[in-house]
Image (cartoon, rainbow, N blue to C red; front, side):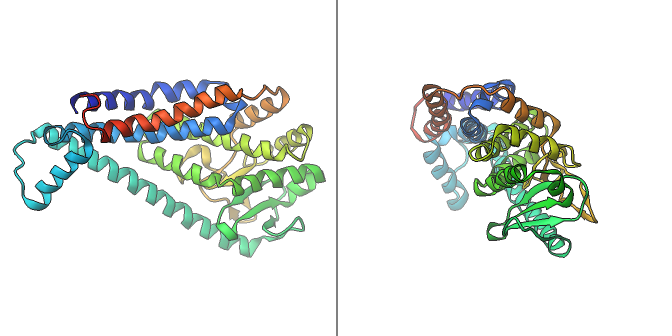
Length: 333
């Protein structure tokens, strides 16, 4: 497993730095947001797997020819007092680092989820006191505020879309429909789960610049995906005007409540008749708004089926290669 550990380490470095930087600067994701979203997920998963796997494989190299065999031998040492003389200082250090990193990632994921759910619960309680039902249908409420504001609050059967008086008075019926479709798309496509995962990644590894790039890119992509749903029934002109009007509000754009607290790009800081949008409301940044409007004004043809297939194949390889290296004995020696 000697070469396997080094290959996984190199793969982890590549996926942690140059690949996310290049992808965040590429223009093609706007032509196929769903494909780009899958690629970002594959990069994050493969990067984490490679990072932890490289340390595990190096640490287990003296006692097994693959991950499974090494873990069995390690379990024997821990549970049945088998001899540990085969493990040197650096092997034990690598195993300890891998265990700590895995625990840190899992703990941060769960802690982020807990904080988000607590904020959503508090926000939902405040909405029950300060918001009134909307005539636009169930699951939509209205708050009394002059500025144009729209966001959604995920919660399964309790999910709601929140609009302001100012927004409803500023939009034409078709534009309001576009906003509602956009927000409902966030809920139906479970975008808050993606935001949670990438926010947790950034919280866990804030010193890694690519976690910020990944989160910002994912935020932009989910807005584009929701825009595409709205375009199925509303015109581009209608959607562009709706985006511009909502972007003039304090939230900076149509928003989804679902990301992690403490992320600067995700704070709406709305003072809505005493109701603050929770820390973690994903407001469309100015850059995201410009990207969305530019994409609608100057549409580019979607990626061809061949290119999308190649990207999806790359996603599969990103996940399959480190997995195979970890479980197949002697694949790289």
